[in-house]
Length: 149
Image (cartoon, rainbow, N blue to C red; front, top):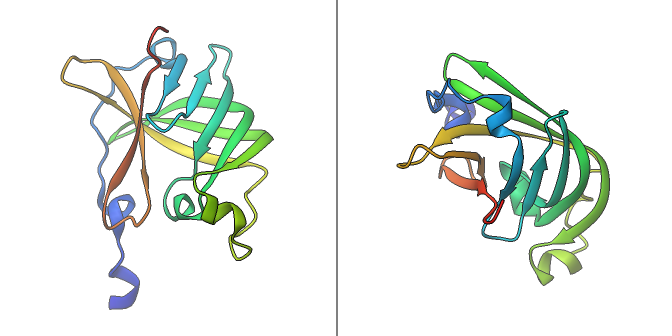
């Protein structure tokens, strides 16, 4: 049993951000990551994704997905979460040349779902994030409002 609980990771013990005041209208808009990722969350619940990496261990596969999908703002006791689903993949890119040429890398998914936690920075600005890589490390992939949006 110890082997099963040794890799608990943040998903097992992370209680959320405690943010409960975000609205769907506030979440809608253009988001970016320093790695060139861009996500547009439209008010009608549809989404446009460009170069979005996988969360959790999927990040290690190195693929970056682009396409269209849907999103929904949900809440639980720990806070609010944006459920983002890629429903139609239009492009796959790789974060590195090694991953692009490695034949042992799994095929990137044609559909995919992310859970983006809603949080606020020191200026009370909304930000979205998910955990990536080894969950025991707790790395976060942060999306902020697109500059100029």
